[in-house]
Amino acid sequence: MRTQQTICFLLLPKVHLMDLSGPAQVFYEASNLGPARYTLTYCSTQRSVLSEQGLLFSQLTLPQEVTLKPGDIIVIPGIDFKSFTMGEFSSFIKTIRPWLKRNMEEGIQLATICSGSLILAEAGLLDGRRCTTHWKCIDYMQQRYPNVQVLSDRLYVEDGPIYTSAGMTSGIDMALGILERHHGPMVPARVAREMVVYARRNDTDTQDSIYLDYRTHFNPAIHRVQDYIVSNPSKNPTLDELASVGNTSTRNLTRAFRKATGHTIIEYKNTVKIALAKTLVHNADYTLDKVASLCGFESVRHFRRVWSKHNENSPGVFKREKV
Image 1 (cartoon, rainbow, N blue to C red):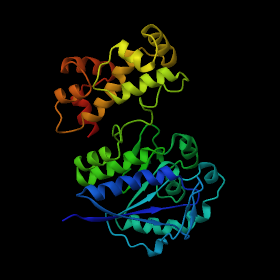
Image 2: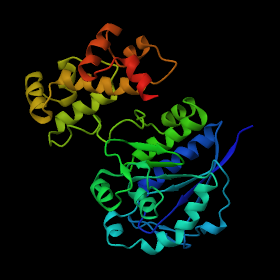
Image 3: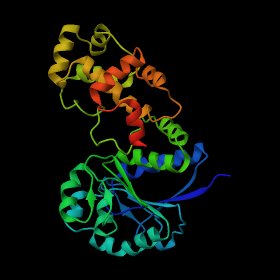
Image 4: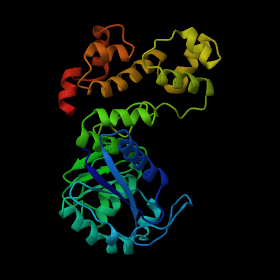
């Protein structure tokens, strides 16, 4: 029989839509795919809340009307950072703090996305705990809340009953991590596939990403080539094939790629492959041969050689350290 859990999203004025929709979709898909079963509810201190992007949420449940039990989760999506620094949420936090504190003490977990961690910090619920937040909020948070240990190089952090995550899409990674904690690796893997999440990131991953790095240039041909490499990590396309993707010559491609990214094409390809390998190596069902094959390496020996250029520890040690 599937257990029933409630995920209660606490919506503040000026809530960010992606911070809300990403995790909500994760738990929705998990409930549909099984064996997890989640009831999603949305609450606030007022019946209607206007998001930062202009979408109005109405007919919201009030906190005192929400019944939660141990194992349920209150999720706090991020809010407009500038408005927070100007004190616009002080009244809201004063009102909601006793409810959050009581629920946490009764075994309900708290989870924040992006700047949502500022709400818990201001409420004093992060004192003495480790957390993370959007990179843009880190310096402010470290200065304003000295009793909170803010980690700048993590996608999400679990400290006791509290989860905190970095910016926006990392809320999806955190939600998938919560699923794995509750149901094992297969449920989040199925959800990630359903949501077409290219590569699941772990809590120990940094807020930097090869899938986003080296993309600040304005060369559309190089962007197309990078997109192809990221989307096909198991393939080893030739220079001619990549030049065709970029609709350019091989000579121009190699020159332009290095100029735009600061790396050769082979360096970029291997970095993408190793980023994927770091995710796949956590799968208990995958041997190193399987990981090497999925990442497009010729052999385990080739995989180990390239891995050693990017990591101090072997794949086996890396896997044990991240468990």
